[in-house]
Length: 143
Image 1: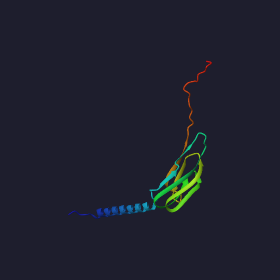
Image 2: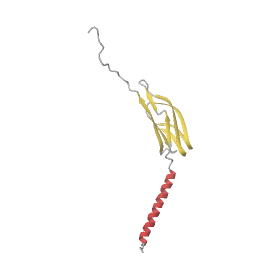
Image 3: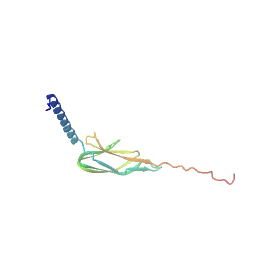
Image 4: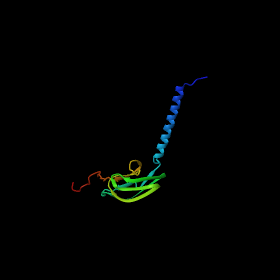
């Protein structure tokens, strides 16, 4: 009959206890984190500037949805004056009129604005000025 030494059973017990403690801490930490299943959608997603246009001026609708209730804030990077927060909601909607000439990054963050939960970019596309090259010189009667 095999004998177990006290040292091997102590190592086994300590190893199991450490694994259980680690699993318990990981489960507790996961409960503290916000739900990763948050969707943020922007309408429109693209603003196209014509050759003569300097800025996009449009109404933007930002919608978000989460699997469970969240407390979060919608911000636009480089626009600190724009901030909309919700407390304990599973979805939200925010509409605003903006003028801009560069891409805008919308972010959903925790109420302390430390953690980014979702992010979307509203792109600005500039129409290229098209130059038409003539294939040949026009004919001249006097040449």
